[in-house]
Length: 96
Image (tube, one colour):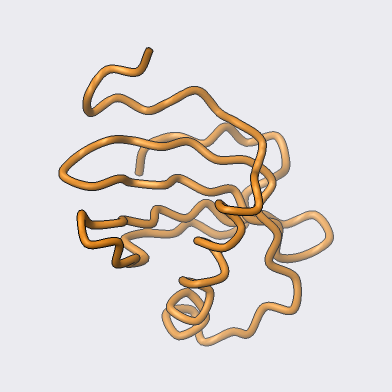
């Protein structure tokens, strides 16, 4: 069981998690001024706050991964709250 405020264990991506990433893809593209042809979530963690933070590992190039922090408020609205580019496949997802 996960404690309130702590990060969940890392889990494989699901279609629902991919849909979350797809909804914030344009926010990331606008922030980095780059379009991503590849945008595939490989794994994720969650954090329950007043809403949910999703920490996503997204493959955006052959061997390049982004870590995204997406906040879903209690109304279900999704906002990209943070990102880190140039991670590798094996980098652990940590809080940022």
